[in-house]
Image 1 (spheres, rainbow, N blue to C red):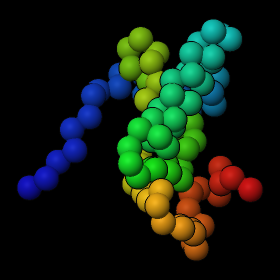
Image 2: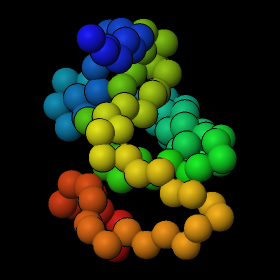
Image 3: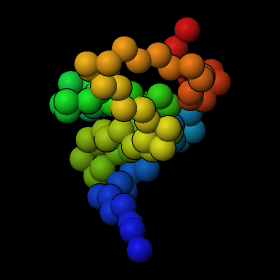
Length: 101
C-alpha cells in the first residue's frame, strides 16, 4: 500500500478565487501568490539533479492554505529531464488552453 499524504489546503484552489466572483484578491495577495508559484517552479526546475517540468500549471492546480500561501499541486504528468542527456519531449503534455506555445 502506497499513499501520498499532503498538507490540507482549506482555501481550495486559486481557480475559485479567480473565476467564481465570490472572492476578491487584492494586488498584494495576487503578487504573493505569483511569487509562491514562481518559487515552487524554480525549485522544480533547479532544486534537483534532474529538472522536473510540471507540464500542467493552471489555476486549479495552485492550492491555497489558511494564510493564502500558494502551493503547486497535481504533478501527475510532470516529467523528469536529465541535465546530462539531450532530451526532447515528443508528445504534447498539459491542458489545452494552458499549454505554452
